[in-house]
Length: 339
Length: 252
Image (cartoon, rainbow over all chains, first blue to last red; front, side, top):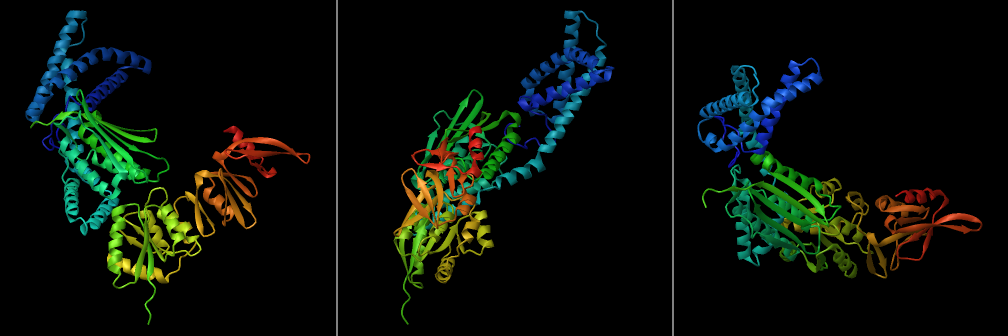
């Protein structure tokens, strides 16, 4: 799920075992299965609880070990064909189960039930989980998420379109060259807005787009719009979902700058920290603005796209403090392969 | 036949390019329509002062502006002695456009077309301003009150108003600095600004934020409450019927 949303479309592919969301799903599903088994085996809930703890002692080591091994193998698994990868995962699971079974016998000396029984249980659970992830991938993939993304991206604020055209019209007679440059910027912006935006794009390109966008707004707003770029620590090789920042700037202008007659500053701070990419946007904020609904829609839109790309590994958080509205996006730092 | 006197126009928009574009378009109209651009304003306050000071026939008024939106500006303009005709302009504002359509108010969509502008100007000349309608389409209470004194307009920010007191035909608007008289019924003001004020007396609304405290006073052998205000020495008597207000303030 790293580079694009639907690269692993039809043939099916294993989930990305390094993704936190996938790991969580595996943990929850296996533990729920264990709990169900415990309840089936017990006459009442208290006995069921004891049974669950017993089962857990057997299940958890295997579960955690599996997650570690699969996370390590993840990139290899995603390169080989789906069916081969499924066989590898099954083999890994059976091998781990065998190893743990033998280790348990040697270390603890207990005499659990037969090895074949373990194999059967492990194989069944693994196949069920893989089938679940396959279905989930299909559900999120092509048709649905494509349609959804297109719809999400189609939400350009008409306000911006008409105001920009108006601004360009005002330039044509007196400053034709500036009008030309502005129309070129607008063309670039709309090309991206209307493009098929499922692939990740370079962060530098996204920032360039943001500059073009703010340039157009500057035309209308003049010195009322001040921008503070803090990009010294920005990794130049990072990949991000397209239009992950621009709509936030559009929000910042609409809610933070336009309602004020005095100048206001929008600050954009992008930096990488370990394997995470942080983007922090701030704009002046005054309460009693009647456009909250639009703001939330844009935020929900970006949140949804981050989830489609990164599942639980990306977050978008907002806060208001001291008349400043802040949006912070944290997402995995994915490096582009070509430098 | 004599030339009709030129139409005197004022342009109001917070964005400089939008004003410059309107100026260009008005220049283009000049061959067919005698008109003169009296001035430009970048915000509502400047617009109202400009229109009050000069004789203006038509105001081209942007709807979405900071501090005071176009609809509020138009409401203040209506109160002038010689209210000008107003033509609203908006790039994209669903609420305003729907309201204009419902009440058959003429408006221009930005980018503005020359032909549409000519039509609107021609119509504005014949159509008298229609009071009342603007109050209905306003989306929020006004941010200012406007008081007129000897041909000048004073815009009083609502945040500075301490109390509103009805006296005969007028309502006194009290700020920390001075008093103004306006000609609006107190009940209507209460309806519009009800959240900001609390009624202390049949004839008096006091700003919640201006209340410093209450004091029990004996007068003619009868006890009653008085409101102490921030910024002025003056006190407001709380009527017997509104005694409960004192208790409610005590709770918060």
